[in-house]
Length: 472
Image 1 (cartoon, rainbow, N blue to C red):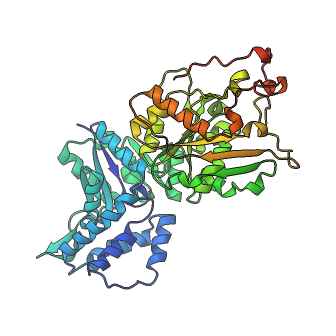
Image 2 (tube, rainbow, N blue to C red):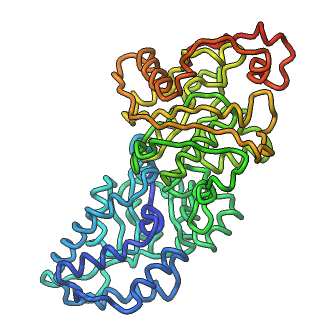
């Protein structure tokens, strides 16, 4: 026997309730009266925040009776109209997980309390293999007020899953299940791999006690959410220049960053402050960004946990592993923004002052694999805020704050034929965004050389050169 993956719909595959869209389309086809139902919006909003409750499920259970006399073909049409809208509201990571289960040879099944005729078109649009949903009894093309088979909720959902599994040669005990609701505890407890998705408060507690994984399909795995917000979104609300009196920001070109869809942000690397500078740029766009960062950052106490919570992608340089690029590609396919510094690390010594930027292949490979646009951001002045020889940024420069200059460029014109050539195009695009002084070859002063080296460096600054290879 094989295994399968069972997905709930509301607050799982969708971040909220499907009810508002179904209600709208039932009104459009003439099944429901075209007027607002008192309290309807409040009920749906309550569901979005709290999840299922016994009273709401009792009302749902009575919907079959309320639907008596409805023309089934009109309900099916409402489902098709709703699917056209709802399929775009399914988060990218949910779609990627469905694709992953299919790639591993596993059947994917939508298991939901919602009426079968409304949800079947959405299931088809998502490419799932089957649908277990509440079916209304029918007589001569109209619903007769009864439920045909299982009311697919709580124990009834598990019973429907087991009956389907028996017919399809699937072992439920070896399978996967994803749900937000404590009322799906029977199904989650019956499978080998349960996952609490956007869990309601009670399921959150149960999942923690049983050590079940919890996740949200609209953010990368491992990123938590509080009151519906991921940490990075909350931080972006605080990313205001007046909260950084020790630095000034000169930012232009943010309109070149896509408002939605995948994008690869690349920046030149001059300081430990660079990610924060890019974060300030992204805050103006209002989009979270997933940084590729060195493993040392993730291994650091406190800082590592924060970086992971912000959706950072761990990179172990020199390991030869493709796992970081695979994780970045998954995020891009889910419609996320990924950021990386093609130089890999901050150049040190005389290499820091070299007007020719040398990059690694990662960004070019990622773009070739996903066809996501590469958006360059030229950074200048971050080294004055946090030079490499300092362990912390200079937060006391309030009277004379340095200026960080960030320029967002147009998408880099890539050819996707050679990683070397595309990397050169990326680095040239970054140089073009820097001020004129960045393109002038000059002799750094001993003090400038010293500031370009790590605080722990004990050698001769004049002898230090960057010997890193130019590729991954």
